[in-house]
Amino acid sequence: MLEIFGLKQGWHASFVMVELISAKHIAQAAAIRIEIRGGDWKKAYLQMDGEPWKQPIKKEYSTFVEITRVPFQSLMISGE
Image 1 (tube, rainbow, N blue to C red):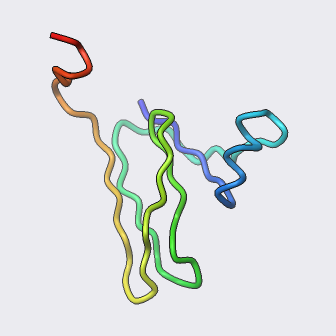
Image 2: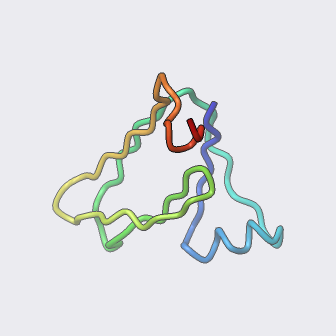
């Protein structure tokens, strides 16, 4: 199950982690597809499983991010 939260800026995540402010709870889902529309912003700040990244976005077209569960566990993670 995925928990989806919204943050205003990249620094917002740091404040949430030290519990100075809270993130906006958006939804729970088994899989998601996010459409990020271009505008004045050049990147979106995303985080999954504790790993943050900057997702580049373009003004001219939408950026799509899909997150789904894979049906098997990685051998690198399981150590086998």
